[in-house]
Image (tube, rainbow, N blue to C red; front, top):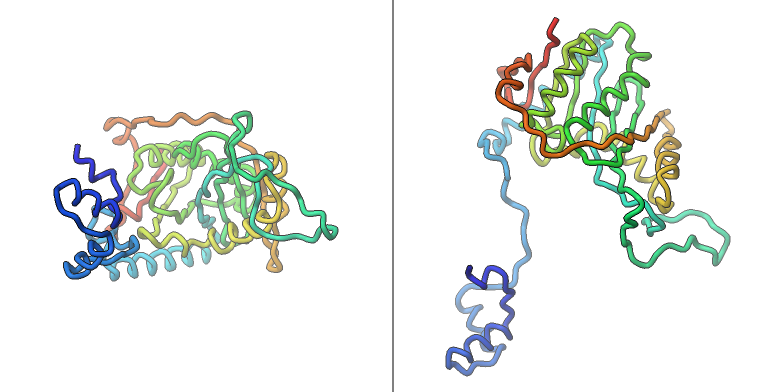
Length: 302
């Protein structure tokens, strides 16, 4: 294996390598030579789209998808049907760790936290999976202690429905979900679609899904109507226990009347589950003619 793949070549290192090859040259001279050859120090730049699908890199397709989501959301809202925005935040270590933010305390008596964030093996990291009800300005956060899998994602939606959704929408006939196109609810995940099929069969209603294009998930309603406020409420207090995390999430509110419920999910979610071709054939899915990988409806087996 070429060692250069794993070696940082500074000017001094390059100068040393040249000396090993019989050339005596100062590292400053190496810098001059690199400039003449058209090299300069440059930062990494995020430019490459990781998607294989060329159409996802087309700005017109992205604009089309945003218009489709907006129109579909409005159609569901006008009909009084539930529309939810979903996402899972990164795992949060539990412990007496520093959080950014300030709060009023007696002068000279700040909360003391550990100077390094070493994860306590006896305390699980938590994964907050959020569901935001757009019409009612209500949020539900399922706090898991296991892996963020597609089964966890679907169970989080299930938890929202039975704790909040069915009371708000007793006459619901359809459910519309807007989601990031990656992670546990990836647009390419077979397990996600299989889980939604099980939920559709359970609720006896079609579930329509639209995914935001790659790199645009921050436009999702849950980001700036739910998680941003949870982050503000959370940021001043160390997450010493799961109870504190649940309390900080559930106590989040806004002047516009945001209500948030939090639940602890103690289930262990297995990773690496494979969905066979036969199981996938059982998913009663209809793809939208418009960007079908991003827009589809899963119908129950009536």
